[in-house]
Amino acid sequence: MSLMTRLLVFAMIFLLTGCAGFEFAPNGKVLFIHKELLEADRAIEAAKKVGKDTACSEMLNEAVKLRDEAYRVYWSCHTKEALELANKVIRMTQGPCQGSASKGLNGQQSSSEMALFTVAHFDVNSAKIKKGSETQLNTAINTIKQYEQGHAMVEGHSDSTGGYAYNMRISKRRAEAVKDYIVRHGAIETQKVEAVGYGYTRPIASNETKSGRAQNRRADVRVFSN
Image (tube, rainbow, N blue to C red):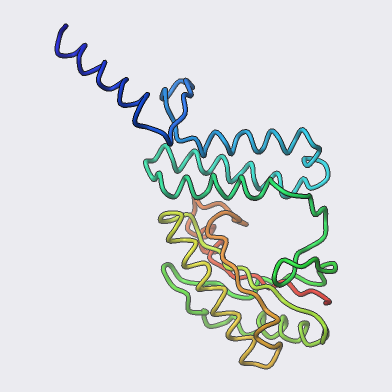
């Protein structure tokens, strides 16, 4: 048996006995792939079979985008970030469909959304609210004050520069910065506003241009009536 043949045999034995986290997937690129990615594929198909593509199409469309992003990140050799995305897809598609209703603090069912504002933009690698954001922030604050029984959600976002984990962290910091601002200005009690980070998963402009990336580095505020 030649050296090359022996190496191939040893490689196959390793793959078949030592890669519990992999699954056979002859897709034209590789023979084996992390099972989380294939589970994300199956989760989306299962959701479609039970009608979630109609009952909660927005959620499922976002799950498909995240699944596609997971593969893109995976093929660029950022395995950990890709598997985090795949697991998020699986979580999104499981459980009962919430339809068009929103979830408030602590995952409780909320009434319909009353308003949505993009209130701030940020420089690259920064969570400091840029000057000139006061008008949008004050508009959101005045709206929040109209709903004494309501709550708010601040959503932080990033452009696609950098890895998934980094952008999730900085987008959460951006959301926290805006949350601190509206609480300090008396808009709402801190326990009634939530800050979440979405990283680069919800762009509003192309990340292929400088101006598009600048638009995506933002924070949005959603206002709910209760």
